Length: 81
Figure 1 (cartoon, rainbow, N blue to C red):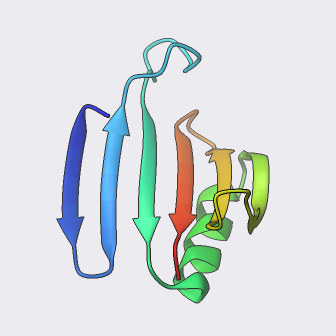
Figure 2 (cartoon, helix red, strand yellow):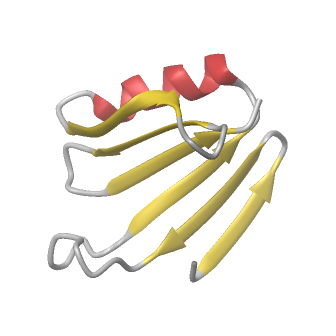
């Protein structure tokens, strides 16, 4: 991770991924603590984009999903509720 921002109920991480689209070369991880908010944000970001990993419980125990939004930006939402 190359940047980290924190706010109430949310931690935002940003990085430059080697598989990101050229000139849109960033990926963002949002660490959230509320499943309802995670679902709402995931659906908003997915509108017009592509879901790579649907939201669901993952082997590490978190509620996680990954998508590329309509602008080509990659998002990972990880909820540890």
